[in-house]
Image (cartoon, rainbow, N blue to C red; front, side, top):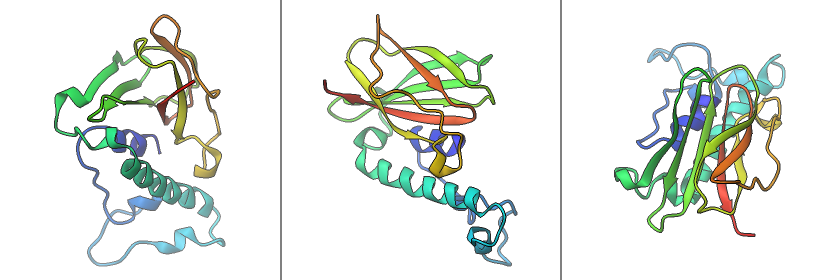
Length: 175
């Protein structure tokens, strides 16, 4: 789930192979179709597969509705790294901008540890942020570690709770 959220937010086009849209474990094969039975109620981990299916659906909906994710996809001015040197924390964060300069903040925590009050330098241009997508949400099969609404930056830093193995997207809020 974390990587799907990262991939949809990162510049470039998304690519999934048959079955990845619902976390099929088997490798893609031209000899057989996707393992749709993984989504059946009778399958013991069907909820996990349905959660990933629902996440991909919501990622696509947010992608269509959020020009910052596609309008300046090939323009360097449409992207800015916020945290690219946090290898010890396994955290990546970046801003995407639409043609009007409106940002979307994407933060991925690729570690199994919750990161509390994780500080990211986003500047003072946005008064407050709200979570618009969290791949750790319960309805996606996650642990539901979320951020308060809204999150207000102080001195150019926004402090977030980063769920384990998850990506969160935040959008500006007008207060």
